[in-house]
Length: 342
Image 1 (cartoon, rainbow, N blue to C red):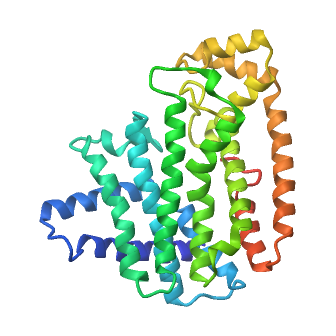
Image 2 (cartoon, rainbow, N blue to C red; image 1 turned 30 degrees about the vertical axis):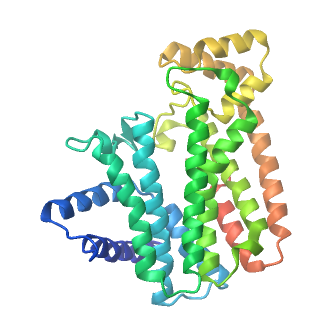
Image 3 (cartoon, one colour; image 1 turned 135 degrees about the vertical axis):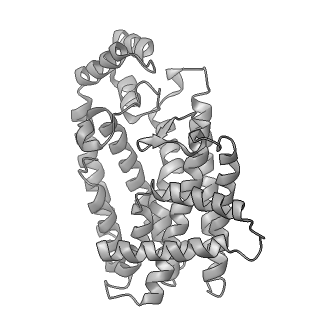
């Protein structure tokens, strides 16, 4: 994996060089340095899981055979397009949420001399994707399918972000808007499509497959993405911060978390009153009351039961797929997230 990551980063260097010398724009030293600074900053944030999974998926679709250098480059380029897409989402998401930090360091827009220039930086990042696709896939028979795929997933993710934003309008903290169906819709569109479906869809297109024939694969990956986010919500509250690598803030941030919608579903009137009075307040006493309520409602046990059923349903759906290669891809994704601690 370390060798694969090294090759993946080598492709990043090539793509970055191409973007900084794009013939369709006359770069000045200042503009080139600015874009270089944006990309260097984002490289420090990228975990690269989504991008690397394109190579992994493509290899498994080819029965795990050793890939040619050209195949590794192309799969890596598509992987980087997904990383660029996520960077575009995160840069704008931080502004919309008025966030201060991202993975332990200041958000891009919070840096000196950046501010609202970050909005344009986000737009530039999105445009970099189409430049990469044009440079390296224009001659491929699936080029238009790739463009359609990225456009479709961007639309779905932006729509998920919209549901998230309008469910909790700034200054309006209304828990009555939170429910399991709303949580599912936000997660499905905001996270699952680009984090789980997109990497596999890219690999399928590279392998010469028609995505219309893989609706079942899409559905399994969306369910996996929803399970992943529910895990995230659970870990935010119950995981050891030392293991998780951060201190959870979903309670004080008034997040539409799986835990709070389950609490609303299970609590009595007195407990509901406690939820309404304390959820979304950045006060240690209020946070402690919410966590105590979660324990009273045995939400840890509720999650473990949900996890067990989700895993059984996913493994059953994967086993029903006729292609062993596709099964291997899906098992690979599930294996990376099942029972994760961070």
